[in-house]
Image (cartoon, rainbow over all chains, first blue to last red; front, side, top):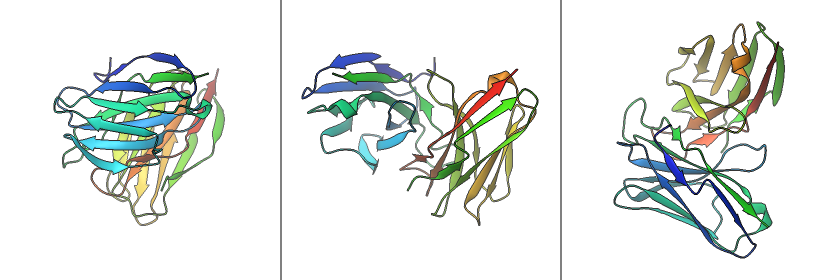
Length: 116
Length: 110
């Protein structure tokens, strides 16, 4: 157990629908990252939050949005889902402040989304 | 911009060595290496911050040439447990927009 909790583990839904993925960071970590990994592909950076505020943005579609709440958990909202959105979505957390290990990432087990 | 990794894949016999390279077109603050086993989440291996500095994890070591914006991961005397996909990750500053390379799949056979 990495300490990063993601729910749900698996999600099957239809095109056009909306889903919410949830992530609780490791205790003490202030920064949360979201990555998308399609089948046998690399890790595509979506977005990063630090202590409730957006810190960096990657190739996140306009149909996707995220936020980090005061208790530091984060949610990734995916709407108007398309077949191509099927992927494994990872959340990772880090300490997120200055220092050598500020952005060393601890990953959750991932949420596997299947869009039919 | 994503760092570029090479090779895409490598097949080794137990005990053989391999090198995985990671390069970036941008100045780097740090380079991280992660390993993802099939069906699992990526796991942090090591971080490199200074030019020429080497770190190690088991018999896996890495170097970082800051001037060339390149890092190399060395798998020495490979073991079956080394199989997986290795990702380098880079950041332009101390935190934020942490990007991964496309990954290098490593298969170690008996």
